[in-house]
Length: 200
Image (cartoon, rainbow, N blue to C red; front, side):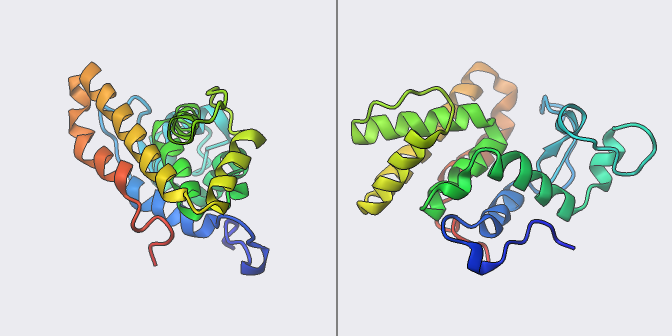
């Protein structure tokens, strides 16, 4: 049973089923990169996350380790993303699919608080708003995003947000040269908007 599938008639805002395809394409499969502080990952879910947030003993050997990351299924990963990202941070309340996908994707990669701060800063800078840049994507931020969508100016926000994300990645690389190995992938991720609605 695919727990992350949502019936089409229930979709009134952004669609998780389309968004998760983008995240999974960017994250890929099992990786154990020494430069990744989160440890081994699979589908973008890190060993550290499994140990800190959920019961991640997927192979039932009594311990949560890299073997559980390797054995994690696509369905398990998608369900984790639905519960611990999409639903937790209310991305489904965002009316524009591309913006919802971008904040979801950045949240997975750079952390939710940072992704939300960058979005709030982009809203303020591009539209002269005065949102508190606290990393909490509350009703004020979501209402501002949806008002911009209603006004037909979502592309301005998308561009500003992508630029802000790329600037953040560049600052990370400037502080730690070992992260340069991620530069090309991060830039592609920052500006990948053409397929943000669906990878079908």
